[in-house]
Image 1: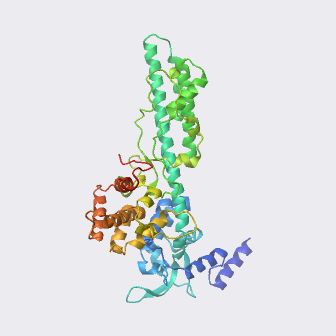
Image 2: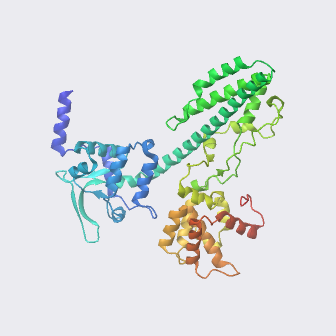
Image 3: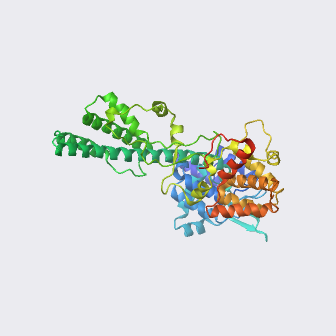
Length: 464
């Protein structure tokens, strides 16, 4: 074994210190074929994706820290076609700045390479150096090449969407556990009152329930995986059913049915098109639990008209897409977008509200249209409306690409209306974005207004 390791070391030294592999060759091909980042995407968008997905994509905090440090050495022009984002600072200087050894930096770089975030553009002696011209573009450089990170973007976005769904399911499960805990405690309090009123001796049963409740009464913290808290929810449901069975003196089947009724605190919301983007997913109104309250004993409740059993048999993905708006769950930027009502607008409604001029800019593809096609049409039309790239970028930063496209659609309609048409569409567009900043922009009301005018009725009206 020692001879084998010695041979590997000698091979590294004789071949320049880096052993080739299919992954190395793929990363070199990516660097050579790099055509720049997509429009409206900058290097820090990539870094933000990495930070948001973190360990679920294999990135440790130290790896992210080094990637963040390297990102600062690149410029926007390095991420354009014909250039490469190469960091040519010496390994020793990086180690000093990071407060670690050179060897630790190399290990972190190797870890980033394995997850597909970087490669190397080596000089003959592996020394890192380079030079920029007067405009800031790299003339030549040898060092760490961050180009593979650009190719990682689709994978990171997919994992981020999965993470959002899992997080939503986690929050929903936690909420249900909280609800059942309150119900269990309420039943035990009812038993105590009955005992005090002389209607029976429930104290042994209370002690038994308390003993069963103690092992599952642990605090729900984010380090607990979804599978664990789902198991806790099942235990809470079972204990609650037992408590109600004892209290009501009924059979278990009746208790099971009533517990289902108590469980269903689902917040109803409209159905959107299946190809809606994230910001067009349904955000449901928080339940006040009035839909789960009972005015008479559970055993005498009438069966619900709603097919609850069918709801319980929905897929896990359907369950997790019930995004819950709880305090601290959405970022300030997401709350701003939600305040515009963008989540209530489906792609079908947006297309029906668009003018013929807008629809003529839609890409013609042999597949169903999606939100990316809609955004592409808006981007193509902005020049006709004299909306600058700066204004478009500002709108995308504040409302997202879908929100910016809806604003452009409304600007286009405002310019073409018969009564008081807009004379300065660029100013009109910017005014809408400024209203969004103040929380005074309601895009869904405007879209639904156009649909009512054109078609009389709309499929779903959530303008309330």
